Image (tube, rainbow, N blue to C red):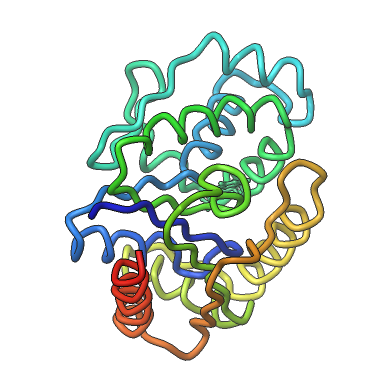
Length: 221
Ligand code: DC
């Protein structure tokens, strides 16, 4: 039985790495919904649109085409944007465009359409509460902010990018605050989501925990 899995949680909690590993173990497809908000922020950046100007952002989005392939490649019109959307400047702008209800409506519709055939793992902020309310397994992945900042610094260092821990921590706290307090679909644990604190767990330990939950659910269902 193929199911859908929702993974939500704050920035840099490891959602994407967990979802990637799970997808590999299960033969499922991982859809990184944050990358879609980041692509809208990148679109604003290259078009010189203020991310707070809601009307102009929606107009630009309606004139563009965002296409997410099953291997995770993201196209903005004809351009592959996977690396460009990871710039720290884009992170905060993505958090701001994600407050826009009309942007959310458009991206949520795309995400729901993609996941209709099941066998998907979606990670984001509103997957269990809005996008896939009926997902068979919902996970809310949290971790201490300092641990998340340290992980982000280490991850980037491995790619040769040196970041300042205090700046990364401040950025994480700013985004958490904005993502949790926005009016439209704020970051929130769904009532039926399993809470996993990954602060002191390895990636494999988190993945094993989720595989156990999936096994139980599939047995029940
Ligand atoms: O997961 P991420 O850090 O790449 O996401 C970038 C921003 O997009 C994040 O600050 C909040 C927003 N987002 C959202 O509002 N809803 C989602 N489902 C995914 C991301």
